[in-house]
Length: 374
Ligand code: COA
Image (cartoon, rainbow, N blue to C red):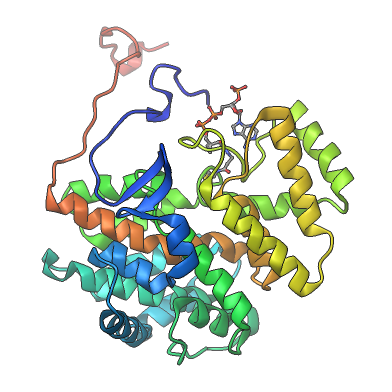
């Protein structure tokens, strides 16, 4: 369905104020609470960034230690939730499973009044990877895994549950960096969905369930899975160049390219691309990275479109042995921090979000009784 040129998906429309993030602001590609994403990616761990977003400040060492300990203590899944996860079919999409898991948790651990909102955010941050990997391992390997591991980091916990062993530090660090890069992005579709739900004074679980539904689509978070499927169809860079050219001639969308706000590049891409190359070298894969680069080149040469955060993240995850259908759910395990920050910011100065529409339907019609209709 063609979008109206007039409304254009609210492109360029300012829909509110935020203290949390800048996207594409001149001189500062992407910042979280005033900190440049490159400083965070180079120097922070994901838990520091989570603290910055959810609790408002970069933690001191003592605060970080107690935050990490708190997140570790919240990883367990109640028996009723484990039963629900076992009932969600193994061939369901894990984004659908997470949407259900979050919604169910909202039934058994309801938010109540909003005085414990940061606890709900921390609980979700801690247990989303547990939900995802409990469900995945149950249906893939027929095992009921222990979700309370000794790993301090979310990234280590995730990879440990996935592969049943403590991860290689390079893999853990790269996953951690992608979690930092994915954590927050201003009024993107899923965050805005969460803010609209929050604006009705609904609870955090409802906002996060709705946000997961918005993130699931291939025009948003689902693009990293679609990008993986695309690059997997080619065997050589030459094939990739020719294949993408054909797709562009057919006016197909190439997932992992383009952006609503950035115009010449996505600042996250340079970090992801570097990790993709590093991991390709590490696993000795000599094809996927050059294929990805060929796709990137033809997209720029033909359309002046650049790789967004999802494109090289796909090969980064692939090289560390993560199945493709878990890519978008990893985005959830990170973006929960940005979503929670926006839920709390919306609540702090709430106004129901209810825009107007220009009516373009028929003029007032004469009522026709059912027996007289043609
Ligand atoms: N592949 C091919 N063409 C693309 C494209 C892509 N990934 N992204 C944009 N274009 C084209 C559009 O077809 C359109 O061409 P036209 O003017 O000839 O009709 C033009 O570029 C402008 O795109 P438009 O759809 O108006 O931009 P938007 O701001 O509405 O869309 C996205 C932004 C992100 C939805 C869009 O770039 C896209 O669909 N990308 C692929 C999905 C993706 O990677 N999503 C993750 C975003 S982080």
